[in-house]
Image (cartoon, rainbow over the protein chains, first blue to last red):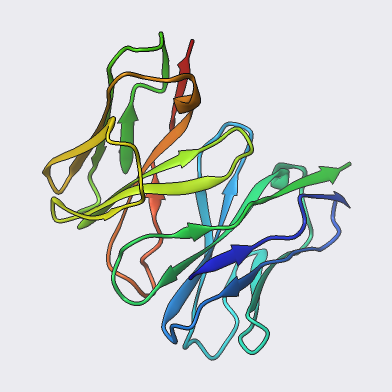
Length: 115
Length: 114
C-alpha cells in the first residue's frame, strides 16, 4: 500500500533561516510522483513543487527545493530564506504510476516563521 | 479566471438534511476528485473521476453520491447528513501522471452539520 509520512507535526523557525520539512514515502511501484502543497490559514491548497521518480536531479522552484533521496524513500522540502508568509501547513503527497488516479497525502507539518 | 471553482464556500445545515456541492474546472483536465479534510487537517480522497467515469471510490458511505455530467464538472450530493460529515470538502482536477500532473484544488467547502 502507498503511504506518505510526515513526522513533524509542527516546526518553528526564525525568519530568513532555511527550513527542511521531512517526508518519507512507501511504494513498490517504480513509477511515481511526489508533490508538496502549502495550505495557508485562508485554506486554499497551493502547489509548490514536483519530483518524478525517474528524475535525476532534485527539483527546484524559486526558494523551494526538494531533497530527493530515492534509496531512503525520502522527499524533503527545503525552503530557503524563510519569510513570514511561509507560515502555513505543508503537505507532502504521492501519485502512483502514470494514471491520474489519486494523490495520497501525508499528515502535514505546521510551519511557523517567527520574526 | 478561477481554475477550479466550487460552491458554496460555507454550508451550515441540520442533521438529516440533503445537500449538494458543485465543482467546475476550466483547465481542460480529464480527471477530477473529491477530497475530505478533517478537523486534524488530514486530506483523504473520496472519489476520482476520469472523463466522467468513476475510477476510485474510497469506501465512502452510500450517502455520498458524486455526479459528473461532463468532464468539466463534478458535483457531490450528500444525503441524510450526520454530525461526522462536518469537514472541509475539496474538489480538484489534474491531467494524467508525470510532470505537470499536479492537482489544482478549489477553495474548499466548509460543511458544518448541527
